[in-house]
Length: 130
Image 1 (cartoon, rainbow, N blue to C red):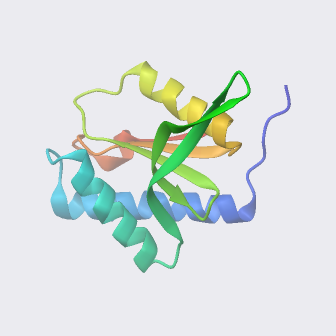
Image 2 (image 1 turned 90 degrees about the vertical axis):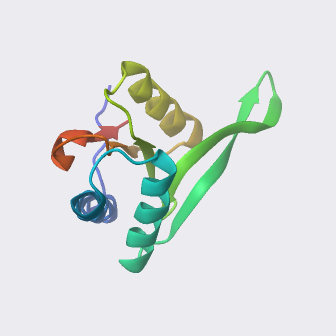
């Protein structure tokens, strides 16, 4: 299986996402609702010049039928990178499977699983490449 190579744009977006998440965590810390981190990260990324959409619908195609009430991506940045946000005590392996499914279904290659409920933000950020 051939490994996907990130474009310069995807690398730049990823670095901006990590920097923005760290900045938010420094101010707000852990322990808040996921939705609060979502609006703040959306704001930070937009402020930094990226096109960012929240709660993006991802239809499911099954058996030749399109189901519009499929999935919702927390954040889609520059139509290239998916961010799945959490605010939990631990990262369950199913969260990675969820992000991989989102990447596959959306035909995107790069995603970030970000858990804000950690003492150090760098331990809460995982980049996933599919």
